[in-house]
Image 1 (cartoon, rainbow, N blue to C red):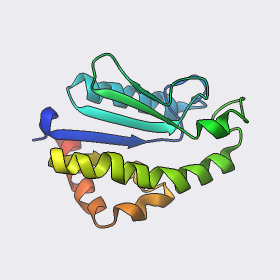
Image 2 (cartoon, rainbow, N blue to C red; image 1 turned 135 degrees about the vertical axis):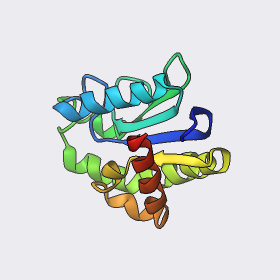
Image 3 (cartoon, rainbow, N blue to C red; image 1 turned 45 degrees about the vertical axis):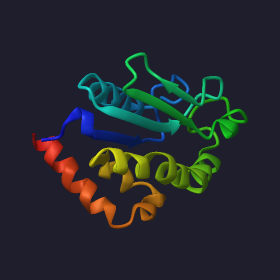
Length: 149
């Protein structure tokens, strides 16, 4: 059983909870999922292409949900919405996000929390999955256990 004090969720999504970042159902889904995990006591980090006019990092009042807006510098040049300038944003995500995830979030979370959850369905659609190497199989197993609990 996953214990909230020993489990960290890291969610990666192109869309997110910002109005700027919602173009379809994905933004709403990831917003609801991240909030539901935090409400159940899990430390949760949501990385997404965010509104250029909002803070790059924002922690919700409960302290369990942290929003991480990525590619904001590109979004400033593409103010229409998340998919405006999509190719540039995807390139930026693939170039800049993996090292930050591994160095600042995944390694510390593994050290501090034995069960780190990175949604494998998200990873399967992102080029930088290779940065996680063999760990993906472990995350998939834990994710499946969580879903069946």
